[in-house]
Amino acid sequence: MSERYASYEKLKFDWPAERVLRVTMENPGRMNAADAVMHGELVRVWRDIDADPDVSVAMIRGAGDAFSGGGDLDLVRDMTQDFTTLTRVWKEARDLVYNVVNCSKPIVSAMEGPAVGAGLVAGLLADVSIASRTARIIDGHTRLGVAAGDHAAIVWPLLCGLAKAKYYLLLCEPVSGEEAERIGLVSLCAEPEDLHDKALEVAVKLSKGSPSALRFTKYALNNWLRQAGPTFDTSLALEFMGFTGPDVQEGLASLHEKRRPDFDPDSPI
Image (cartoon, rainbow, N blue to C red; front, side, top):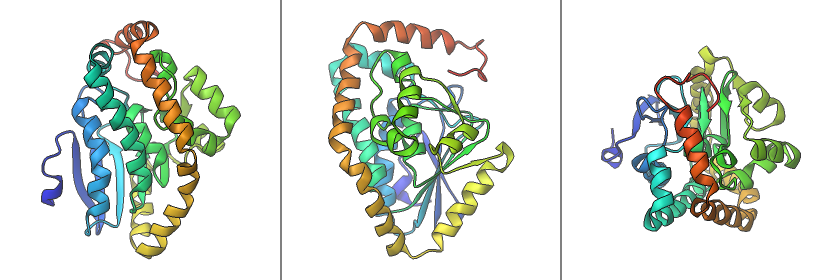
């Protein structure tokens, strides 16, 4: 493995095929929830991949049976109590979206189990997003007590239309992989046992394509996302303003209750 990735702690790397780099989010016992370390690593990894001459395609998945369990509750609580932490994470959330969008290498995501929070940003902004039929895609912002920000306002309306985006973002209803494909939220749906093989198959096909053709096709298509920049910046500001309000404390208490050790991990979070 390149020294480029040696300093990462919560992201693991392997090469499942020539010129295909697979990134695995790993936070054992917490459904790969993004703590402060992983959140920062999810921001900078796309810059490292973009600059890596050995990578033609990147893949992202979660360890075990979960893709991403949302934000680590310790980090969320710190954001409500410390302005420095809040502003750091705000900048990271903005940079995460733009770094995924601006990465010149194609990105393939493989989502199974819960897909929430910072991991979901990369999952849905990936150039080819593949979800297990039984995946549970949830934008949990309003359940926490803050406005739906980060990737939500920039990409959900483009992918599945404004009516569906409003329904799922306002209510925080879980979207199965099957339903996500039906409404256009993800590129493909696969059976759980076929998910990672399908993602690798797509990545290998992309790795054999013309690098410049893929790069500039991605660049042109992502201009739709760049044009939504002012909307994204506004939504992000409204989201993080909510962390200083009273509703987030009630949301934190509710989420903490659902993440007890005895809580059923197969239930929507």
